Length: 190
Image (cartoon, rainbow, N blue to C red):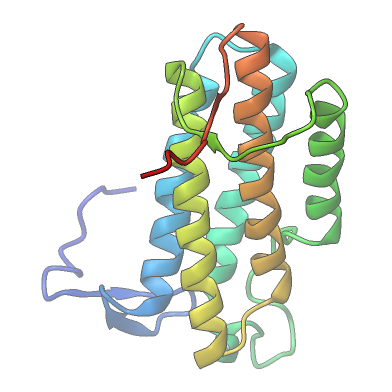
């Protein structure tokens, strides 16, 4: 597989199924942001964290690749003329969302109740979680906008919403595991 094809030199790229669009197309922005998110999750996974969390993050990275492929497939190209599904891979679905919810619930049982907003930071691993959470929220916003223009699988939006919750909870869990104090946001009175 050759790394450079030169087909994008004119500022266009191909979606799954062959349709060519500008590289700033909302569909490209959506799955490009999911790819950026996946890179940040790789950065979290490379930290000194538990193997259980690394295993969960690896699953999430694989699901994000799938989610990106789902976003890269326009609705009119989802099935072949024969009626067979063009994207022949397991989709991100309610089971994927349930996995995130279960992981959140497991982590949340170990954490003190939140009484304030929490400022990002305290440790590099925690900060990476917050950056990934913000990128995830951007991917979600772009996917919602894309869905307003052309329908996408609603599980994509649900998954990204739940993943940002997972990343926030993971930041709190890593703060606890790494003995880092969570800094509460308490607005100063003027």
